[in-house]
Each structure stands twice: as structure tokens, then as C-alpha cells.
Length: 496
Image 1 (cartoon, helix red, strand yellow):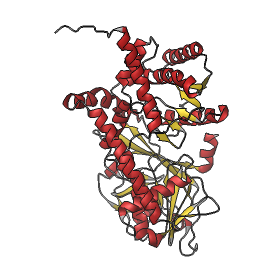
Image 2 (cartoon, rainbow, N blue to C red; image 1 turned 45 degrees about the vertical axis):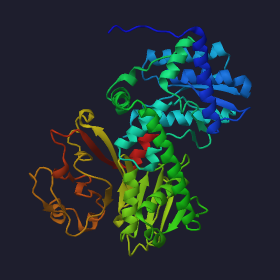
Image 3 (tube, one colour; image 1 turned 90 degrees about the vertical axis):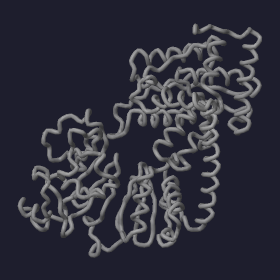
Image 4 (tube, rainbow, N blue to C red; image 1 turned 90 degrees about the horizontal axis):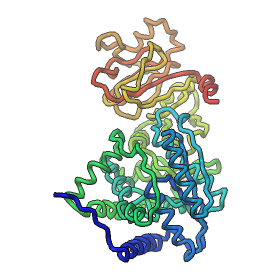
């Protein structure tokens, strides 16, 4: 069958545009995204969604008495293509007579183990917050569409997320970030751009199948829509329902915890451990997430595995342990749990003659880093593809293990009587750690100072000495966890 080009009569094109504007206005009103007279900072990448957003908000400018300022973030990652995006945005803003803020951001200095996309997102949101504060904007408008929401929900489904993940992206976040195109399909915006002759740019990286979101967008969504034409709308409805349920459950949990979550004067938030242990596990998860979000500047939730690690520690017999969860941490003590920013100084409340610092287990997130107090050494963990690993050169201060053969959390601790591991090079034979130390002529007084990295499956690394052969990288390995150690003073010097 030959494909036919078809264009609606000019009058109907105008009605189509009017319908689109009405839909956006309905979203804005029903979700209370914008109030008349507000100043909006509009994030514009040059792509079709954000260019359409800027044009639509410009159409509402007079009737809603809006002040518009545009921000464009240029990472320079695609060379001339990135500069072309900026030129496109600059030309359109000049045509509309709108002020433009250009932020040139660098992601090459991102924390070890953080993906390029995550680092870019963190930098972009930070830049937008700064710009909104500087220009006095009331809201920051983002160009995410119903298609973006459906893709996000599918990604969270594939990760096995709970209600919070299945809620997808909120239409309004933190009372600052808004998504006026939340209920608008991408194809409607493309038709609008075509009919209004508005230029836009296409990011070449959005076509690469190496990114999971791209595969969901180009492969999975089309199949779902072929089977169920309303698949995108259904996924968006699922997100709205989950968001409502999640918000209600959070409210119920906070009501249950009234008077139990105590804000301390030094910025910490604590909860009685006996009370916590008496809660159902589903409630414990929400309490831990809330503890972390209360001390995080941007209220970012911790990862599921990190939350589960805190719950295991709190419900067990541990008398002191630290779990770092991104920019927050939770400390489990004998009688309480408390959260604080990740750089908060931690010291055990137990008497040192009962629990020495070197005996305190510390949880190590991936990616993440901890300082072993017995020696002051910094132990870091991050995840990389085996193909990107490179040669480790026999350096005993850095090892790689098969990420699929261990689980989390990783724990850094001192040796215990009866410890055994399988030293690399001994063809899988196990050995008592005490005998291993004796062979190396390590004095008894020094044994407890040597940090040991352990996974739930067993010892992973006698730090600085030998890794366990069971988790070593094999030919079939795809992803690795790289562990390294260095003195804290050296780490500080390199980060300056």
C-alpha cells in the first residue's frame, strides 16, 4: 500500500491548535500548576517537547499575565550538535523577545560510579534552582509529556518498584517544578510544531539502543500501543492512582508516628527503636524513607536495597551501625534510629571499652564510600561494565568483583574468630583468616585494625591484602563492583 500525505484544511488546523492549548490550560488548572501573574522559568533544551512548551506558554502569557524567562543547559557532550541546540534556543527566544539564561555544565567531574545521565540530571536541576532564585521565578516549567510519564512508569515496573516508583513523575514537585504537558501526547506536539513552523532539534543520543529508556520508547511502547491503543493513557492513569494511594498511605504512617519522629536541634531526626521494631515491615519502609527525606535538602528518597539494609539492622541485635543512603545516612543505635546529612560526624554512644571504634560495622553502598576509623583509610565502591574496567595492574589497593554473584549491602568490619575466606590464587580452597594473618606475620595488635569487606554471601576482600576467589571477575562477567582503598588525606588532596 502506498503511503499518502494528508493535511487537514487550514481552518481545522487552527481548531487543532486551539484544542491543544485548551488541553494544556485544563492540565494547569486541574492540577493547580500556575497562578495568574506568576513568573515562570521555562527549561528549554531545543527538543520538540520543550520548544512546544515555550510556544504554548508564550500564547498564554497575556491572558495569564505571565512573566517568562528561559533557561538552557549546555553540557557540550555532543560537540557541534550541542552548540546547535543552544543556537536554536537562542534564535527562538530572540524571536519571542524573551530573556535567556545559558548554563554551561560539566559532567566530567561527576562522583565515581554515578552514570552520565544521573550526573547531568543533578547538575541541571541544581542550575535551574539557582537560576529561579536569581531571577525571582515562582515556578520552573519542564517539558515532560504523557509519553515520558508512560515510559517512566514502565521503567519502574521493570525495576520492581513499589507505589512510590509507580507514581512516576509528579505534575508538580516540591511546589517548584511543574509539568504543564503532563497529559499531552508527544505526537500532538510534533503536529503543533509542524503547523506553526517552529524549529526544533533532535538529540542523536535519544535514538541509541544502549539506553534502556530509548528501548522502552522505540520498541516496547509501540508494541503495547499495537495491542492496546490506549496503553500510554492507561499507564498515566496507573501513575495517578498510585500517587494518590501513596500520598494517603504516607499520611496514615505520619499520623501513626505523631510524636515519635523527633527533630533534634543539631539537624538530626530520631525514632525510638523499640517503637520502630513493633511496626509492620511495610510501615518500617516508609518510616526509613521519611527519615532520609527529612534530612535531604531536596527530599530525595533512598534506594530500596538501602532501606532494606537499615530495616535488617534495626530489627536485629546490632548495637551500632551506620548506613549511608546517598546524601543522607541512618545510624542504628541500641535504643534508637536517627538520620542526618551524610557528612554529619558519627560517633558510637557505646562506651569504648565495650565497643571499640574498629569493631563498629559500617555499611558500604554501591556506589559509595566510607572511612575506616581504625586506620583513617577511605574505602570506595562503584559499579562499571567489565568492558570499561581496564587493567588493574596487580594493585592490591583496588579489586574488581562480579556484581551478579554478590548481593548488597556490603559491610566493612573487623575480623572475628572463625572467619574463613577463599584467597585468590588458592583455586577455591578456604583458609582461616587467623592463619592468613599469621602467614603474613601481622601482629595480633594490628589484626583488628585491618578492614574486611563482606557481602551477605561471605567475605569479599581483606582490604589491602587479598580478595576472595569466589567472587572474582570471570569470562562471563558483565558488570563489576570495583573496590578501592586509599588514605583519607590522599583522598582529600585529590578532590581539591
